[in-house]
Length: 416
Ligand SMILES: C[S@@+](CC[C@H](N)C(=O)[O-])C[C@H]1O[C@@H](n2cnc3c(N)ncnc32)[C@H](O)[C@@H]1O
Ligand code: SF4
Image 1 (cartoon, protein in one colour):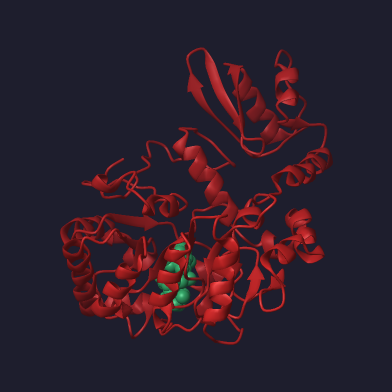
Image 2: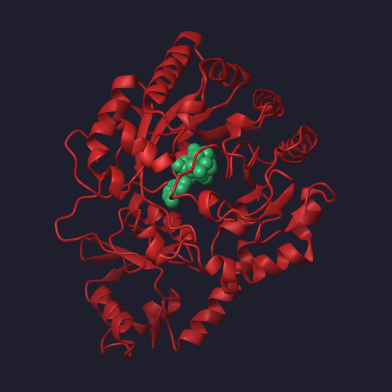
């Protein structure tokens, strides 16, 4: 027997609520069901006597073999397909003065550098307008370097597409910050991986000046508040060995400077090999889960107009089409894009990615489920969401940040 790994459960009176994450379906099971299912999962043995085989098969948790499960998984991608693509990120530029060791741009990105032309940008926004209301204006670069950024934000706003940006506070000059807010940017995520000047430089490189970052953050908050701008401001720290002890201080700092939200997120693996990423920190996001939902929901436009399947494609490894010669609909319907969606679970590019798991796990956490994808909280371990409590559920920015997984750990002053 084979039990696929995409299930979790939470205790309820008299049994368990079991969720099959692939089917997005939940059902009620008796008390002996979960231990029995777990033992099949662990051993591959037959279902124990007395366990409701019917329940497990009806809810597509157990299969006669791993091959049978695979066949079922492939069929799922068919009904995940959407009629229309959604653009998750637009790469305004892939130029960047920072040299972050945890970012593939620094050591692995080999494609040509450049800025998105306003023609490609306006054409793309015009095509997505009315279909989606929100997207981010970065991929692998520092978008603040793009001279047309405030105009791009304003154009998108006028087309009723709200924009967000992840950027580095030392590059966010107050004048530019105000232009962006006036143009209608709805969410600014500031990457601030340390408050300690030396640590900050060791993580983000020579141009990462902590004092400048601090000045810019405070100015940003002041300008936002005084100008009455409707922009959500978040500070983000990625949990790494270099800043491991700083989380509490960071959250206190977020409250002190008056941003809306501080988040300490997990270190992502991208496609780094173990020996490299282990030098930076611990990756606690587990491995690949197929089929991933991103190719159906999160296309990315590279600066030159090429479309890639998701935010993990830093090198343009899987190019689905090109906006300079095709419309978005043509790209979405192309044989290349269809093939990628159909064979997503076989793709070499996808197999090295840990990202889709984050979505699923976050969903599990939100729903109060205990185990999912073989990942467990340690004995007595508490999961804490490191946020400014006042900003929980906060307006526009929340949609974006909901996708980020948050750190496991205990902290005085953080809210659970
Ligand atoms: C690739 S960056 C581009 C935007 C901008 N240059 C910045 O750093 O904010 C997009 C986001 O990925 C985050 N990031 C980079 N490497 C990461 C990693 N290994 N794990 C988690 N997040 C990472 C950055 O902090 C940033 O929030
Ligand atoms: S994380 Fe952002 S700032 Fe750092 S190298 Fe990557 S793109 Fe540049």
